[in-house]
Figure 1 (cartoon, rainbow, N blue to C red):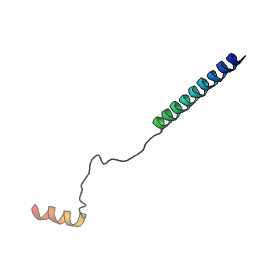
Figure 2: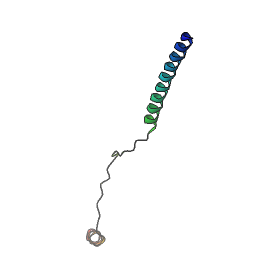
Figure 3: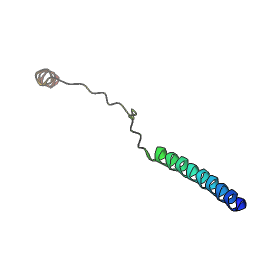
Figure 4: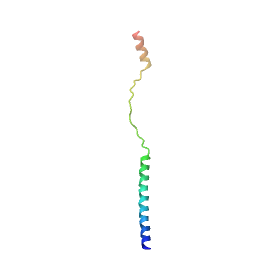
Length: 63
């Protein structure tokens, strides 16, 4: 009878260890699956605004 109780106790510990390991694996997978969002500067565009009145005067002076 004690032998059977000892075996049952051992199997319970094995089951508890397996459950702990499964929980750890699930937590690890969930952390890997979390989406990470960030920003990185890929390129910069430089531009100038030219006033139309000044541009027309410059064009007429060069003709």
